[in-house]
Amino acid sequence: MFKEKNMEETHTLIETRRQKMLALKEKGVAPYGRRFDISGAIGEVVGRFAEGNCERIAGRITAHRDMGKSHFLDLTDSTGRIQIFIHAKEVGPEAFEIFQLLDLGDFIGIEGEAFTTRTGEKTLRVRNFTVLSKALRPMPDKWHGLADVETRYRQRYLDLIANPASRELFRQRIAIVREIRRFLETRGFLEVETPMMQAIAGGAAAQPFKTHHNALNMDLYLRIAPELYLKRLLVGGFDKVFELNRNFRNEGISRRHNPEFTMLEAYWAYADFEVMADLVEEMITHVAQSVIGTLEIEHRNAEGEVVRTINLARPWRRATYHELIEARVPGWFALTPEQRRERCAGLGVELSPEMADFEVTQHVFEKLVEEKTFDPCFVTHVPAELVPLAKANVENPHCVDVYELIINGQEISPGYSELNDPVVQRERLEHQVGGEQQNLDEDFLTALEHGMPPAGGIGIGIDRLVMMLTGAESIRDVVLFPHMKARANA
Image (cartoon, rainbow, N blue to C red; front, side, top):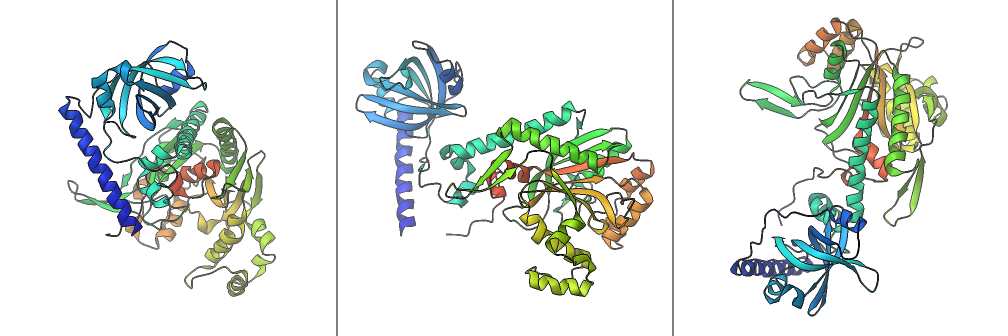
């Protein structure tokens, strides 16, 4: 009943605004204006504010205080807010009639003189104004309209209009990505672009999205990782490369997973996983200090209470996969596969019957180690079965020279000493695809046969990194337009 009433009220408001739009046209005013030259963005005007200055600004009307013949409004753009004052006598009767056809949410351009009110508010006294865009739908109620989380995600533009904290979060995301690029470029890395549509989906074990190219009459896949193409560039002589772009995986959606996500991958010839760990540790602390302004990241609940503080101060902990599991489940690696399955039941770790023994151990690691690790920890010497594209450890060939960086209960970044032996690489990939030769990337294997230098490589899930640095608890909070299930018909 409430929903129906709310829909009726919205329909009435829209119809009222449509009538105002028609009234503007009847007065010869274009409700959707054109170019308007400004003397500066609102934030700039506020920053250089001086009594008597004449300024031209443009923005959205976000507040209105009606005092009869005089009106105070808030005008807002992406850089800030300023108060404007308009008086019927000062703009004239015709202009004031046009002004009375404006609503919250409309865009206007104004020319005005700077003055300070008796309460100390910086204000522009309107001399002339221009209608730039008539909003036919009302703005969301600042306090109630976007309490609906689903609306925030589906109609992000409303969230950005009504929620300054959301706008600030996405500005931080933009700054984080910009700072990562700057950090890598100053260290000699070259940013490159590799195909997003690939004949063979490789570089990770994941379910791809499939499409078809009509002109070539061939199936293609949206990439699940750029790794195999970036390694081709190492073969070609680019010693330091990175790509910051989208990956796609046709898998589940959760608060930590979106089918389309942003990933950084970087490769450094003649380095190894330990060098890459140093690089990532330096980069993340640099970005945190530069963008967030602190190495102590607070995560809060819906009530604003601090539930945890992540300490990014260096040096970060480094520990082996084996010792971390043993610390949680003493004697784990002395058990037989059958005993490990039995132990999982007592640990509350759910298993599926088809899991291999190494997958059982990995499941224990994810539930009892990863999800309970909040401060940074590089997990090293991971089982070879988990990472088919990394070098085997010299002392223990059952492990690979890999780190997995865990922060905030989830993997933020893997890093490898990259496998560059084409014979071993073929064996690993053949095992991974289970004998389905058509899923082997023969061109990549051919490239390796031409010789790839030893190298270190990293990946960083940018969405998860932003979640960690900003305190967001869902990936949908840090992706401007997250994928959502289609709305059910009303």
